Length: 164
Image (cartoon, rainbow, N blue to C red; front, side, top):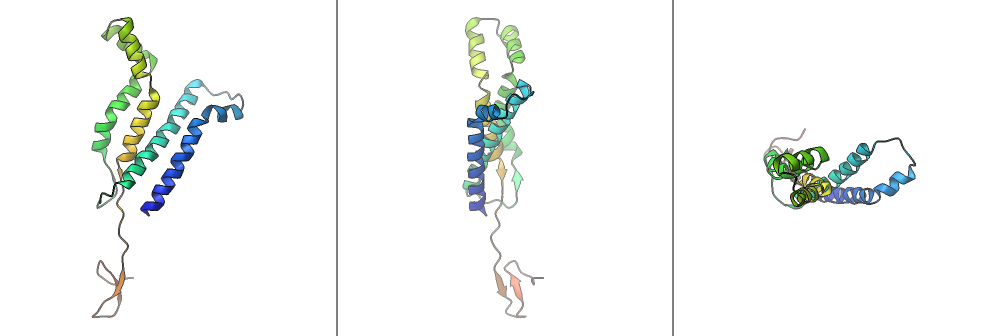
């Protein structure tokens, strides 16, 4: 099951990468659509988030850590995902302009630094998606072997008890 999920996630990640790489060409094929620029940018970032989530999920599958149950490690997601989430929120123009003028003063060097540092939404979305994907922990159970009970002769699972 683990190998199937790794292969499936890899193929999906590859398809989302192709979709992201040819995003502008795909939009040109659909012609002039009356869709706002914000929705187009959001869709592009969502595709990138899903792509990086699948890469993080592959890393989670490849780590051979044994878990007793499936869960989402919210602590790791919060600790490692807080920084890219904050930078993704700050990458919007109005918030960045407010920070530049009111907090740091309107110096040219600091405003350029903040602009170039925070405007990399691609990096922040990929980091956030990777953290979310790597925080998913899936437990793979071993297959139960059916053996005959020596006393009753009934087939039982290796966990004990008769099979219904």
